[in-house]
Image (cartoon, rainbow, N blue to C red):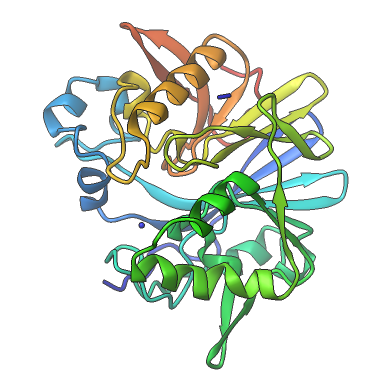
Length: 312
């Protein structure tokens, strides 16, 4: 078992970062680098002093003042001709309570196409959980209507996740997110709920959903495996590498913080010292790496684009 308008500064000409996992090809599809203030809001326990005392975080994952670097992106996986997208980011033109999410205008769709993942060619969309920064590109605007961005795909989410949100009283901002980014997909008949077993559930050859509860009750991580090699997409079980050095650090939006910390510890313990490649759903470049034990916690040894799980 392991949520002010802004525009991306990068251009569509930048190549996607690519990793190989056996016969799988994994591409990071960038959406936006999040504002510097995001880290302090999301992980309030990660003070600049604490971050500065974790030197391996700099310069990739934190700046010289101890401010965390975070990003929004998807992972696009090609598996035997099947095109799978893990999470869909924040989305364009969405009305959101959080200023970093609100009314975004990025070239994400053009990046998908440049990487060979035109929206109409995507077969499966995996949603690690139903938060605004993971479901936004589920839909795009067509006049005054939100329509599925990936019209030929099956959108997969954990049944536990769906049942939780269906059973709680949501604030208006979250109801808005469901109205513009989840319900249109469900109403189009493209939304599938997956019963995720404790040991994981296969959803495609070499792709398994693993339960990682805590941040949300039904959150999943995504395990990729092929020819003896493996990788794990974290979802929000780990928002930032500082939580590897300090697994007890929890997000301000974790629904069950103690469970989230326990899940994170179990995940890191299982990965430490193995060749499995960890792919962080909000980690800035280099985004991927191997887990090693250090000073009673863990650290990420970065694996640059083009690396395989056995590198490093």
